[in-house]
Image (cartoon, rainbow, N blue to C red; front, side, top):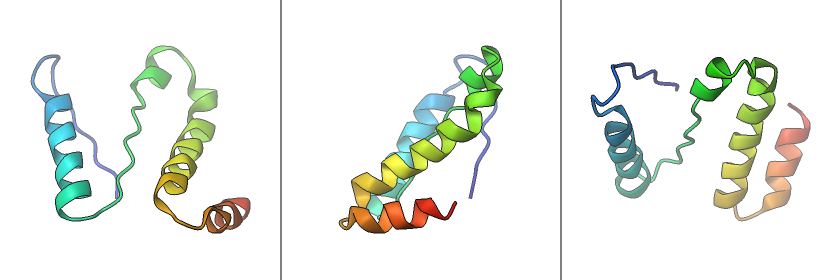
Length: 78
């Protein structure tokens, strides 16, 4: 699932996201991955977007999964 949160500067987007991520992780035991695409659009880095996104997912999985070889095995097929 992906969620887009939009609003003007200073309206509490980051605070809302941080609270939601904390609740999902701590209360509901759901692994979340926060990936901010803003820098890629603002600094014309769209060529790096896909690689950075996949690296974020793999990095988070390595933190959560006890058997890291399973993560490496899964990511080789992507």
